[in-house]
Length: 240
Image: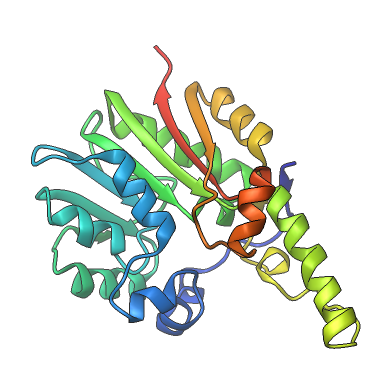
């Protein structure tokens, strides 16, 4: 299930300090000095070493850069939001945070071992997703890997179902479609099959897993029982 809305692209000013620190997923953990479970899972999978070069696209508050910088000096974050770059620069205590777009990377070819796109690809439309993936491939070394995390469209359906029941039974009021999925900054959602198709179409070889360990938008027991609703984590390599 791939959804692509005919909406205007979200201006960078939308991702301001209030949005990043008080609303974006993982903000509670961030303010407590912790890291979101989804980010922690990806970092465990990557297994960086001192020579690793990693680029985090849509770096937001800078959690990935801060953790990666404990291991390597080649951790680079990029975001198109000025507030995000400022927050990430101070939080990560690293000068390797720059402003740039997800469709035109200011880097040479074959530079990085890893590119991460975490909780961000759903904010791009179909055209920009393709550009982002092509740019990621361009800056990767031949044996490099893309790590991608995104909500699961099946999980969205279950979340809306449970939210509707809660409104009708507990709050006794008509449900309103006011969650993230219906907001103007979500352009695309994927399930296991549509994400696999997208990556293969862009000449990437994907390995996709369901992250049932994350807190996500549903209770954890739902993800453990209905694993196919859990957020998606993917490792993609360039097809040779």
